[in-house]
Length: 145
Image (cartoon, rainbow, N blue to C red; front, side, top):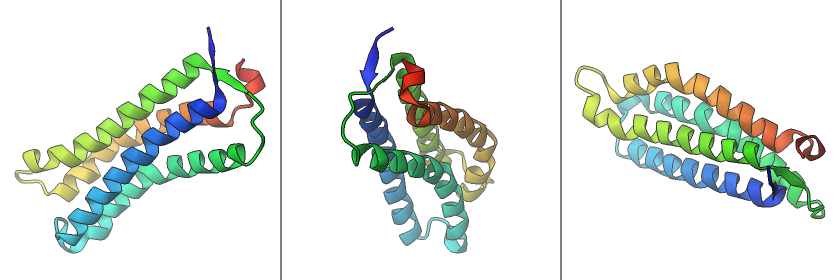
């Protein structure tokens, strides 16, 4: 199976996370300012930040480390790269579904209750995605080739 330039792959994965998380962050700022969560705004942010910040922090740390060193032309495994891309898109999609579908399923439940109950499936999915990303970003590239 063909390999992909590590820096190129890392930048593409980072773009998915930075853009996806940035848009969600902006949506939460607007919702907070407009009072969507009332007095429980902090609880809404307690849902969002743990869902995105650990992975964003990992990606940022690796990018800073990699980009500050000379390009060594390292190659990463194409299959693992594709898994990282697809799992990241799926994970971001699930986060967006929870946020955008909550007004349509509220009924007796508040938006905050929907966010909190979604942790039942978001947390395990986040673990899988973080494992894949960690393997791609952190594992020595010589072991991937």
